[in-house]
Image 1 (cartoon, helix red, strand yellow):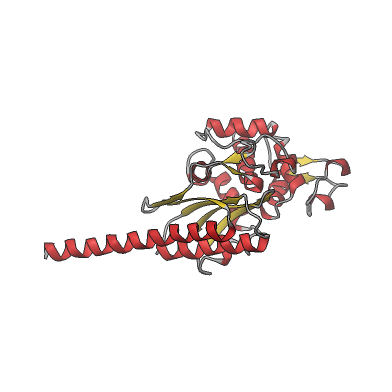
Image 2 (image 1 turned 120 degrees about the vertical axis):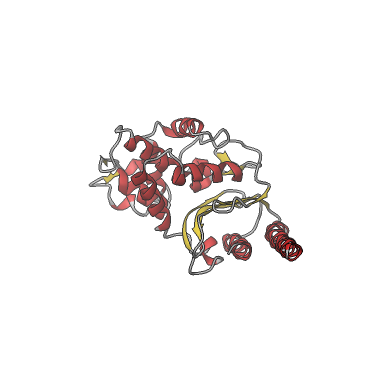
Length: 282
């Protein structure tokens, strides 16, 4: 009997290895198809399994930083230094490109909670800048990240300059490894209180501009919260937490850059990675 059990175990390990290879093979196919640089880090918090490809390389953050900014704001709320119901007033001069929600409330202003909701669920750029204004700007966000153990992610500029994505420029960049670790700290660690963690996750679950990306690749019965980003030089990225049915959380950071592929092609490529990921998870 012991020999049978050992044999079954070896078969399971071999099958798992083949599935893991299939995920990384898909990532490499995306690289070749798009002629892009692609970085992926995935961590299954239930089993400890992890998948990595170029995960220690730097990639432009683009709008994925907005989750981090709102995490830093929630940290201030937890400390009693800020309130989500504080109304922030701003003018037409503060509006930047792609501000679908903040542009509608110039006369009344918006609460910090509403600004984070707009920044994460709609990727509103002015909303993100106004949130940055309450956490001491890009330098304040970077300092917050250093304080929670992220020594790699950095924000140097505001919207929309931070989206340049110039190859080799370290400004406004992260690594997939760093992003997965930081996302885990914010959502499941002790950096934020329980209410703050729940709020940040809810904003990510309510993302309204990500249907064509990872959500298009994973099965429909998975739960997902995510945030996308788009920038220059073909930059496209997404950070996500996913729950397959009956399974614990899976964290993912997928970034691609330095490609001439269209946005639709980049979205489809990330969806393909999502399909491959579903093949290695229960």
